[in-house]
Image 1 (cartoon, helix red, strand yellow):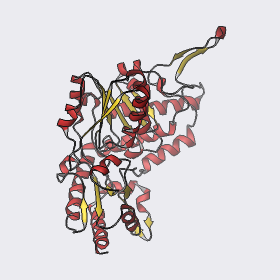
Image 2 (image 1 turned 180 degrees about the vertical axis):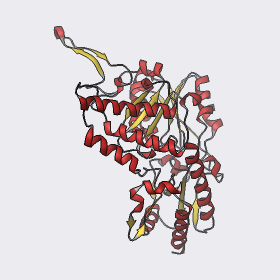
Image 3 (image 1 turned 30 degrees about the vertical axis):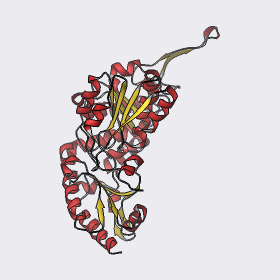
Length: 406
């Protein structure tokens, strides 16, 4: 993976006179030249609106936009392009399900099952819908090491459970959840399964058919792509029954006000859920990002991250005033390590590292319930990706040792 670093222009930058070390990949990833060039080429040579024009630029833009969708469909092994809806990211994708499917299918007495490790985007939309529809949100327990309590999760699935929601990988601890096991328990009880794949799709090979997911949400910017583009996978038979999430152009087939009465018929999938002009350049950039990851090899991406995580955890355990959270067995997780330095806030920790050109995350990471479980007001987080190296981790550990002395 060392050779790939030359593809990322920003990694040549210096911060405060030090070489940039980027360990905030769980928040967003850096972009290779291939993605940047693809977006630039689109705007310089092919910019037009999609699906609506007969001129050359519109046809070219439409082709590029749909090629992005086809690429994403193949990447997660969906059955057809009807099953992949472009969104602004994971958050909008989950909200689409919550509002479109939830408003139609949840009623008083129904239950939605989530966990205490979820990102806020997989909690708040369901809370809003539940309050509106009179449904109940259940929270499955998380063990002290940040792993899911599967027995508790499965015991909370009842005949009233309509949908089970789970992050494939925790954005705080990097724990990899067995979504196939949980999905089977949901289906055995007549419930649907929604998977937050924001931290899994960028890091491992995903097969939605093998995992039998009903919904999968993910974001382009966490997998080398641009911000503002993401996707929702949904099984076609479920999406067909769901009403549109937003109204406007593109999502309609016909609108008529003849006789003073308005009649509306909706477009076919996936366009029924893509109102207005979409993020065309985002689809172009996402396709370039997926092609880059496929060339690197998803198995190699995951194994590289695991190797870095194991090495970083070993170096951090050499220090006396540093506490690492999450499971000690790094084979159960992706490249994310939350930690705290004794007597120092996470924000001060991140600022200290910034002085040396090392980018970390600090705060709740949009997962406050899990921090409450760990009895933390916040945490610092180092997260790795395919372009990071052991040499960078050595530098990180060196600065962490200096911080410990303070």
